[in-house]
Length: 119
Image 1 (cartoon, rainbow, N blue to C red):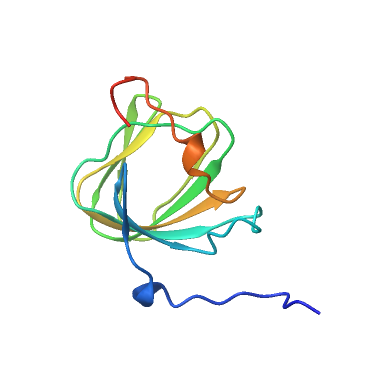
Image 2: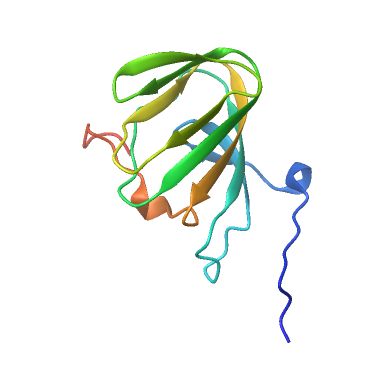
């Protein structure tokens, strides 16, 4: 019988570059389609992007800044939570550390940019 749980030690996960800065991605495996969890270090303003399928939930852990959501800016600080639905152009502004929960599980093929020269 396979395990019905998974555990990850986020501080031991290798960070990867992403449009927002650097992300440590937990539960990212081909067989997991449910959800993933990312600890993201946003070191400066992130790039505006959107997803066609993913809903993302951001929880700010550290720092103060803004979230730009479909062109509107909102202040964020520790314990601010934001749910970003598919199609919403978004980016974080400022130096922040966040938890991001993509549902369904993160798919790098579902990151879209209005400027085709960006990747």
